[in-house]
Length: 171
Image 1 (tube, one colour):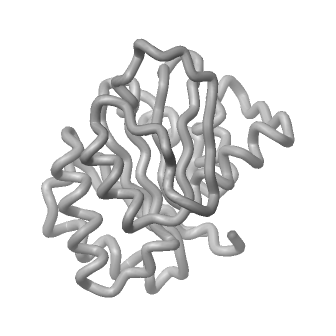
Image 2 (image 1 turned 90 degrees about the horizontal axis):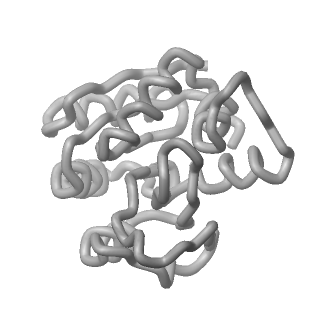
């Protein structure tokens, strides 16, 4: 991903994040430039990680209907166990950034793999720490990547949703 522009929206519940994804889709936003991250609540299984950058994910967890619907919109999916955060499910291009951080053994000043991926895509460390804290608090992150214009358009659409916070990060 060559463009390091993004807008990050924080949602309290998965239905609000899902509604935002649908609004972006209705407005014609490229779904291949959209990522979503949230905790997975299926803790009976001790899965270390699973990712799939092509077809839909086969692992659903307790929020199966939500994640199953979201995978229909997004490209790529993953389940990771992030120390300090717990099991998280990720959909969209952010999967590749996390895998790159893990494969490259990127360690950036105490950030988790998700934090390192967000930082690698141009999000400032202070914001990354805020997003990691949001994930620990069971919130959902919706990240739209793209050109400056695409990110601005996504923010305008996200402003009409129930996001608790929306922040643009430009390269």
